[in-house]
Length: 65
Image (cartoon, rainbow, N blue to C red):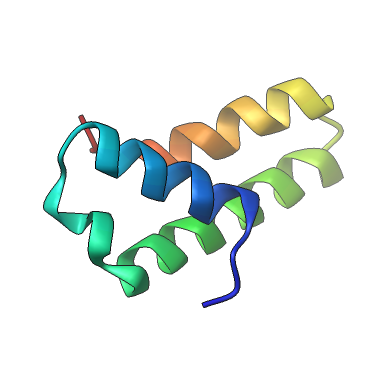
């Protein structure tokens, strides 16, 4: 697994909330890829770094307590 900021962030969050998906590397990587894509799309669309980051994290954590 290629660790990215988003995959590390998600893995830590899942561990902190005792989510059983914390060990599911495929799930984490898929979510991280979605977050990266959201960030890139937002930046290409003219969003600031802060707004793009906020949107990416929202995608990353969507549906996770």
